[in-house]
Structure formats: C-alpha cells, structure tokens
Image (cartoon, rainbow, N blue to C red):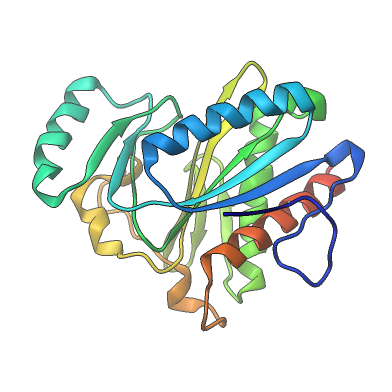
Length: 232
C-alpha cells in the first residue's frame, strides 16, 4: 500500500494538496471486499474529523456487489448460483444494481465531503465520470460519459461503472474501470440491470503496454484534482 498527498508533476502517485482541495490518495492493492468496506468507513470518519478528503484504490478477486435496487431474493438466488464459481455476492448501500469485480479491474472510491466543497450529488458524479473520460484519453482511448446510464462508454461498449452512496454529506463507494479483467465473467450476471450490455476494457485500445494498476490509480486521482479545481 502506498499513499501520497503532495504535488509532483513527474510522479504518477501524487495529487495536489492545496488547502481548499486537500486530498490524500491511497492505493490498497488486491483486497478483501468486506475489509474494504471497513476501510471506507474509517476513511469517512477521518474525513469528517480532518477535512482532508481521501481517494482509495482497490482491486478485487471474484466478487459481485448488489446495489439498493436489487431485492434480497435476487441476492440470495445469485449467491446460490455463483457458489460453485467461488464468487462472493454482497449486498451494499450504493446505488444501482448488480456489478462484478475481478482481478484486472480498477476500483476507485472517492471519500469526499461534498458539503465543504459546495458540490451537489449529480455534479459530483458527473465530475467523477468526466475525470474517467480524461483519464482514458491519457491512454489514447476515446470515451463519453452518460449520467443516465451511470457510466463511461467507448465506441466498443461500457468501460466504466459507477454507484455512489452519500452519507451525511460524504461520498463513498464509487466507480470501477475495466482495465485487463476477463469480460466473459460478466456473463454470470446482468450488469447494471441491462441485458446484453456490450463491454470494453482498456487493454483492447490502450497505447500503454504496461497498464500498471497502481500507476493507473494515481493518474486518475491527479486528473480528478485538476478537474475539481477547474470546476470551482
């Protein structure tokens, strides 16, 4: 795990820390999903106390999460169906329906005090998706955000998903970006409640041959901070 909260134009793991936009980025690496929920909760408490927003980066193995629109019976049924494939199916407090996380997918949780920043929920989600569009452009990938369909899309399909929860003015949960994960795994569910959803991933189009997950995460956070300041 590494973290950064200082300015450096040459290091990918740095974002600005000006007083009005104090943000700490922490790459957590491959993690257990339940443990990551506890880390998010602790981060929210820290943000409330310190006023320093946090962005957490994760990678998971074999987990399906269910948003608040998913009924308990649907969760139970999917748990039964996916048990042979060793998938966890976990209900969450985020918006949306089912989504799937696996190795090679970048998951980003911005823990941000929206009230102190004076930003509404819709504007904040748009900010995160806009960040993702610019982030993908950094790797030579053309994409557009779609607020109504809760994600970012390339001409080949959906490449990034989002589902947030705002609790007492602070955001948690967040978004996931398909980097080099196995898209065939999504056939186990109906992602975002959309049958036959066409998907894409960075590996298919990126000009970067490495796509290191930690570096990707810190580049996303740097762009988030730049766009945040330009929106003020």
